[in-house]
Each structure stands twice: as structure tokens, then as C-alpha cells.
Image (tube, rainbow, N blue to C red; front, side, top):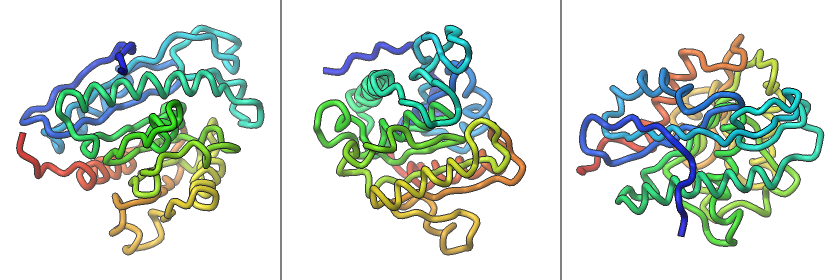
Length: 255
């Protein structure tokens, strides 16, 4: 049985609670970092409960071993060194417990979205597309979707062996700034291409036309690049995230 061990904040829905979005922050932040975005999106999604967990404190190598909130250790932002797989899988277990708590409270797994920024984006890919399969060999959760902002694909050399059977039917929103100085835009695109080439997920480039836009929110990865955006979330990306959430967890369920 999963037990929630992460501290977290909650932004309650303003009408009957029929869906949940779990928002996962990046290195050195905490759940409060998502507050401006959840406050912006909440009026358009009044049926959504927002869960904003805080990562554990740990020494982070890329920041001179400073103790920061992080989901796993980072040797650098070159993404060439050995990854902290134990730290990643421990965080997957912790996020899994949050999902299970929502399911136990009566929210169907198909009405739950995992969303993450930067390192949080990496860990929600591992949690959402692998989920419990990563640690138990089970099927994982069949979530409504996964949203990645300025993130990357972790454990690239073994990700195919970790995916859930539900991964190929999972809608994924991926937003990335073209001028991101930390997680390079080219690396974000390459991560999405690995999901297509090695895992088999459909991949759509969000700026390529109306057909791709119409398929936004369906199975596979919809990748959107934002010209001039750094390691942040611009207004257009926030609007696209809102549209994604409205499509995958629409307000059409009674409480």
C-alpha cells in the first residue's frame, strides 16, 4: 500500500471535484512555485484540484553540493554523466503515492494529470509513462495525460524497458523554449524523438499546422517550441497547457 510521504500544498476546486492535476516543481523550488500558474488556470478549470508537492532536500552536485529541494541529484546540465537512477525511482514511488491517494479518494486515474517543470518534467515522464511499472513490474496508471515544460527524458538508455503498457495511449503535452540555456531546446526535441523512435509514441510538432493542432490532447506527444523563451513558461505556453488540460480532463463529469 502506498503512503504519501511528500509534503504538499492543495488548491481546491471551486465546484464538484472531478479531476486532479499534480504539479511537480524543478530544482531549488517547491510547490509554491506553481501557485502563480495554478491561480491563472484555475478559473478555467473549476472542477480541478491542484496538488503541489515539495521535493525532499538533498545535496545537488551541479550546484556545488548545496542542499536544495530536488527530485534527484544532477551532476550537470550536459546530460552526459551517469544519472541518479535510485533518486529518480524513489521520487517515482513518492509521486505514485500521491496518485494512489487521489484514486483512493474516488478520482478515476483517467482524470488525473501529472505536470512538471524542468527536473519535474523529467520525473513526470518517468512516473506517468512508467508509473508503478518502474518499481513493481505492474501496469502503472492509465492517466488522463502528462504535461512537460522545459524538461527532458530521463534514463534514455533504458526508458523503453520501463514504460507502462498504457504509455502508447497517453496524451503528452511538451513545451520548450527555443532559447533555454539550461535544458537546451535541441535536447528537448531529441528527447521527444526518442519517445517516438525507441518507444513508439506518436509525435506531432505543434507548430506545423491545423491537423497537428486538432490532434492536441490525443495519444502521443504534442511538442511545442516557443520562440525566444528561456528556462521559463511564457504566456503562450501557459495558454497551451490550459487548452491541453481542458481537452484531457474536460469539465463534463458530475461530482
